[in-house]
Image (cartoon, rainbow, N blue to C red):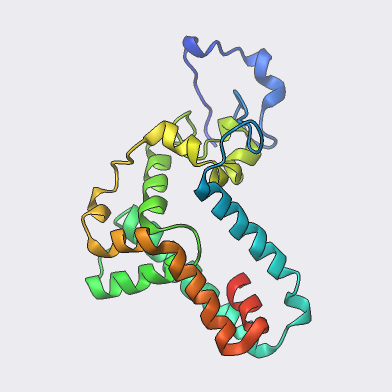
Amino acid sequence: MRNLLFSASNSYNGNQFAHKKIPFSDVVVIGTRNQLWKRKWRLVDIQVASWVFSVHLLSLFAPFTFTWDAFWIAFIGYFLTGLVGITLSYHRLLAHHSLKLPKWLEYTCVYFGVLAAQRDPIFWVSMHRYHHQFVDTEKDTHSPINGFWFSHMGWLFDSGYIFEKYRERKNVEDLKNQWFYTFIKQTYMYHILGCGALFYAWGGFQYLVWGVVG
């Protein structure tokens, strides 16, 4: 990571914060945000935390429900949701406009990303664009200057932190103007829960574990 330069208004002193450097980097932590207590937990924070807890709980059953059928479901699911859905669609296609696809193919690929359970496209793309716009500064969506753990995962459970910085999130008007993305945003959890229900109906608890955790 590149060096951070702070203005005099931040009262930065290299010696004062030297002990707060993130290990193996040159990024200086100028303050840590309370990740769990003494802050308001909004409904979306509880939903995200519950989902993360549930996935990790299900993963404990993976060794006891292994079959090759279940393994290939997880493998194919990871390819479609992770590589096609998130890396190709959410990231390269929507956030960076690195390629262009016919709308039917764009929506299909993006829907795989929806099933990766990394939030809806409007939220994900907005956060990533702000991240690149304000990288490693106080306005970065998951800035390392707020501490390693907060930048790594704590910000996911703190919608108040995001609202304080961006309010209306006006950097995704290209997505907000398309019915598909507004529909997904309004109905997001139904798609995730529906996918889990389909796995369970298809192959019982075993497919639920490997389909969701994979």
